[in-house]
Every structure is written in C-alpha cells, then in structure tokens.
Amino acid sequence: MKIKRSIVWSLIFFLSLFLAPYSFSQKDRSDIEDKYKWDLTDLYQSNEDWKEAKEKLVAKVPRIEEFKGILTQSAQNLLTALEYNTTLSKEAVLLYIYAGMNSDLDTRDMGYSGMKQELQQLFSDWGAKAAYMNPEILSVEWSIIEGFINEEPELKQYEIGLKDLFRQQEHTLTEPEEKILALSGMITGVPGSVYSTFKNAEMPNPEVILSNGETVTLDSSGYAKYRASANRTDREIVFKAFWDNFKNYEATFGEMLYGNIKSDLFRSKARNYKSSLEATLLPKNIPVDVYHSLVTNVNENLPAFHRYLKIKKRMMGLDSLNYIDLYAPAVKGVDLKYTYEEAQEIILKAFEPLGKEYVATVQKAFKDRWIDVYPFPGKRSGAYSNGAFYDGHPYILLNYNGLYEDVSTTAHELGHTMHSYFSNKNQPYPTSNYEIFVAEVASTFNEVLLFNYMLETVKDDDVKLSLLMDRLNGFKGTLFRQAQFAEFELKIHEAAQAGKPLTGEYLSEIYTAIVQRYYGHNEGICYVDDNIHMEWAYIPHFYYNFYVYQYSTSFIASNTLAERVMNKEKDALVNYMTFISSGGSDYPIELLKKAGVDMTSSKAFLKTIDAMNKVMDEVEKILSKKGI
Image (cartoon, rainbow, N blue to C red; front, side, top):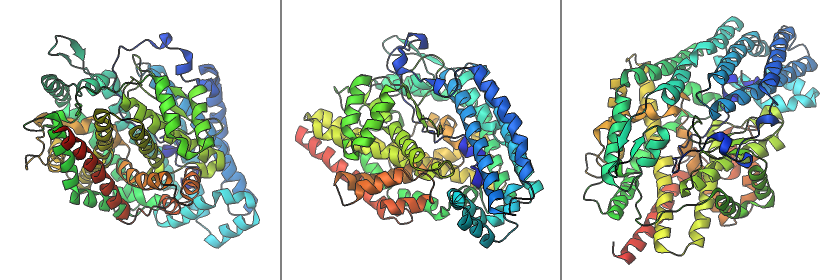
C-alpha cells in the first residue's frame, strides 16, 4: 500500500550489489578491529531485545483494524490512522534490517534467516489487516481528502502518497482482494529466497589448479578475483570450471527464476496492468517508454561499445578478444592498490566539490562504524548501502581488498548513504523513502568525482591509462551491461506473459542471443565463449523485478549532473544537494528534472555517449604516443 510504504520496498533498502573481489586471505571476523566493523547495537543491544521488540510489534498490529470504517469521517481520523501505520512501518523496518544485516555477516547462520522468516509472516498479517485502507480512502472523492489536507497541516506529509493512491485508483482492488494480495506475500518471495540460499550457502563451489600449481576455490569472490588474472590460460580454466558448475544446475536455476517471473505476472494481472513492466513502472509514475527507449538507444549506440572492445583488444595485444578477457587488466605493469586508510583520504578529497557538510558526513561514516569493511568467511559477497534506519544512520557493507575497484565501490556506496542520510534528515518519514529509479544517481555521481580527482592528480601515462580504462569499464558495466540485463529481463517477462515455459535451457538461449549481439560476436569484435550462456543464473537482480535498467538510467543522469557540478555551473551544487535531500517528496522523473536532467528525452543519453567517446579519445592519444 503506497501511503504506508510498500512493505516489500521498505525492506529492499536500495541495495547496490556490485561484486567486490577479494585479493588476500580472509581473516576471521574476531581478528578484525572493531573500527572496521558495524556497530549494530545502534539498532538493538541484543537478539533478546530484538525478540522483545518483535513481540511488541505483533501486539500492536491488530489495532490497525480499529480505524476501519472511520478513515474518511474526519481529517483527524485519517491522520491518526496514517500516523499509526507509520509507527508500525518504522518499527518493522528496524526489526528487518537488524536480522538482515546480521544474516549478511554470516550467511551460514540460519538463526537470522529464521528471524527474517518470522517477520515475513508478521508483514503478511499486517498487510492483510490493513487491506481495507486503500479501498476505504478511495470510496470518497479526492476533493474530500484534499479538504482534510487543507484542514490538518500534519496530513501534508502524506499528500503525495494520497495523490498517488488516487492516480492508481483503477489498479486498487476491493478490500477482500487486497487482503488476498497481501497474504500472497508469504509465498511470492520464495523463489528469490531459495535462489539466495542455494547460490550463496549451499551450491558447491568448484576447485581448480592454476598454471602456477595453486589450488583455488571458485566461490563468488574467488571467481571475481581469478577471472581478472593476467594469465589467459588461468582465465580459461576459471571461466570453464565456474560456468560448467552453474550448468549442472541449469534446470534448477530456471525453475527458480521462472517462479519469480510468475509471481510478477500474478501481481500485474491481479491489479489489471497490461504487463509486469507496466505494473512496476506506472506506480512510480515512470513512463514505460523510458525503459524501452533505454534499450533502443543502447542498441543504436553499440558501435561506441564496440569501439571500447577494440581498444581493449589493442591494449592487450590480442589477435582476438574473447569474453574471458574482459575482466583482465588492459594496462600491464600497473597494479593500483590502496589501504583502506588511503582510500578514505582519496575519497574525502575527491568529494570536496560537494561542500563541507557532505565531506564531514562522510568522515562521520568512516569514524562512527557505519561501514563493515573487510571480507571474512561466511560474509555476504558484494557491497550495499542500507539507508532504512530513519532515526539513526545508514550502514554500508563492503568486502574491501585493496584494489582501486574497491576504492571506487566505497565511493559508490557512500553516494547511496549520503542520499539516504540527507533525505532522512530533511524529509518526514513518509517522504524520506526515495524510489529505486533515482537510487543509483548519487552513487554513480560519486564515481565520476573520484575518477576526475584521480585523473587530475596522476602524471604517469600508464596509470592514466589504467584510470581511463576503469572509467570505460564503468560505461561498459553500468550502462551497456545493465541495459543488456534489462533487455533480457524484458524478453523473459514477455515470454512468460505469452505463455511460454521458461526452462533453464530456454533462458540460456535468450541470454546467449542478446550477449552475442551486444559484444559483436558475429562481427568478430568479441567472441562470446559458449559457457557464458549460464551467466543469467549468476545475477541476483533478476529477482528484484525490473531493477537493473535503473543502473543505466541513473548512470546517464549522474554523468550530466556531475559535469555541471564540476564545471561550477550556476546553482548546480545547490540543485544536486536539494535532489539528494528530497527523498520521495516528488516523482523520480520530476525530481531529476528539478536537478537538471530530463529522462524522458534522449539528450542526456547522447551526452553520456559523447562523454564515453571523449574518454576513448584520450586513451587512443596516449596509445599513439606510446606506439601501441
């Protein structure tokens, strides 16, 4: 229910899942200094305190039914009900993030998984009991609700949610139907939960022997590390073993993803949307054309991506570029490594264009244990920022291993954290929760700041080349690769809607055709190795219901906004800081327009392609200078 925050999206917390490879032996968590670890006592002092808080919430939930039949009788009744629902939401989110983040610190510990399952049951019960609210509010004319808002100033914070409810009136069901949909949440999330448990905790990981005789385990972190090996033979060994292992479970992964897609389809049909895509975008007031335009624009500009691939091939001195070469270093002899303390210093200097308050808040995040820094056995792979602790502060999970990529990942996640921090600080709770569509803007904005700072401070051509290629890898990974994922996600949802069974084998066929087109396989630009057809099974975002396209759209927006701030254009910094302080106080398309980017136009996309070509121009200048 929009006005009380969707239970589902209140629990997603804007996770950013860029995988961060490990490059050193993992320590046990007990061997890591406290200053590099989360302090979760800001949430609850102990599991016992969590259980006590959960039981109190369980006792509070039934009271939500007391407002049934009186919501539209007066402004005070409506306000009291909405405020009570807000109280439940804040307490529920706090419970979930404590269980979820503790679970992420040791994915093998089923105790915290059990705690999350307890909450899923609670949330379904809460949703069922509150199912009357939307239909009851919609039983009167908007003019009545508008009059309540004018009469009671405290209702102003709920205005956009209420307006949104009336905007989506045709997709709001009767009370009994809303109750059934709420209860369906107990099962619709199962495919994603099974996928996460199987892939991260129970799926066996292959072991391989590298060319130097070293035996390594290819879990997610091992794969991320060794796929970037400078030795091509090792890359071949790693890719084959890792993806052959996934191939062993092709049918299982297919069933899990198909189950998730069917859940999406069920919800879209139940609410009378034309498609799962429409059901995802229209509630956020995002035109479906934005999604389709992204896919179209990317496909029309694949020559720019192919230019990058040709540069990669040239720099690596290869006769032919293969997919297995994409993660290997393009610049030989340059191994950019930074301690976590050095990374902090670099990031703080890079962020100076955003002003003293922004930098001071980043310093606080470093100092006050908002960040869990290092990898250790059992810890969830990747990185994310969790900004859902409204009355406290955001948290960041990292797996920092000393590479420049990790510095960039830290800057990226701090962008999310600052977006959450400033939105929570400046918005009332009902409008603090920004939409996923804008969630990746602040993070990729920070990557641009970091890149420009680094490029300005280094003099060595090889280091510059390394940085320039890292920037191009950002275009590859965040614009083109995520658009490739978005196209795949669209096609498999369309196939399901057309009644086609999505077996693992069929999913692999669809994925292979898209990847081959993007990488110019048939034109000889980059050979897509056969075992890459299973890569779709590695991507957790396909369980987040049309999430990935927003990486691309946010990347496009952030490049435009960062350029304006760095060029010190009039009001650029003020507009940007207003944007990251706005939460969900307006629709995401409108928030970006106010900041200076119109995402319904192709203008920002074309500027991004132009920026990419300028980076490639710089790379080719240095290569010509070096005679490569």
